[in-house]
Image: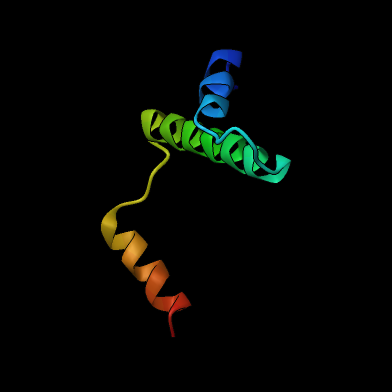
Amino acid sequence: MLTKKEVLETIKTLPAKFEAELAIEKIVFLEKIRIGLEQVESGDVVSEEQARKKLAKWLK
């Protein structure tokens, strides 16, 4: 879960005028990074070899 502080810091990086969609995209991106970091900490990752095998199937 994000903190209000993290969201506010993200909003501070936006220009003086912006579309609401841009703010939402940045907040969603921040949340995805947080989720990814939690997955790394819990060991929920795949090896480089496993990733290459999956990508090879997709790129055919």
